[in-house]
Image 1 (tube, rainbow, N blue to C red):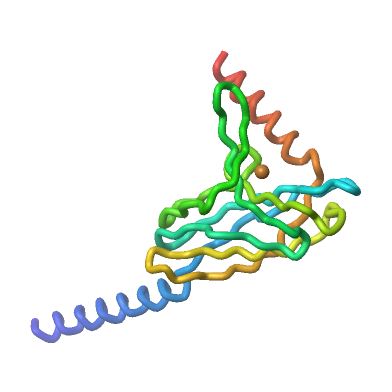
Image 2: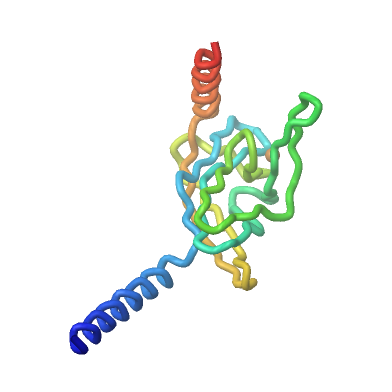
Length: 167
Ligand SMILES: [Cu+2]
């Protein structure tokens, strides 16, 4: 009886230490589906979009890119039926919850572009995320440049779907 209990406790302890190790390794922010809207020649700015998921309560502090002189984190809001876009200081990333950066909400604004962003090219982005302890994590992402109208088409299809559901 005693030995059985001891064995169970050992197994439990081993299991916990394995979980602890795995958690330490993955205790960081995941970046999924990062993309940048391709531009036409001479276009001064563009947007970068992605989904961020932090393992612990964190916030996105800043973004940099070698293709843009200025990078700002923007938020799109609807006020009095008018879409407005403004810079935010940081974006909260609650533990385990995916936060999406898309043309209708938060997005990353690439300003004063050094050149045209051609469809299919890779755009480096450097993200700085801070956790609740004040520890900063730097994440480098290669975002794919996608065609200008790629997002508009999908959002049009979505609105059609929602509309038909309501009727
Ligand atoms: Cu913007």
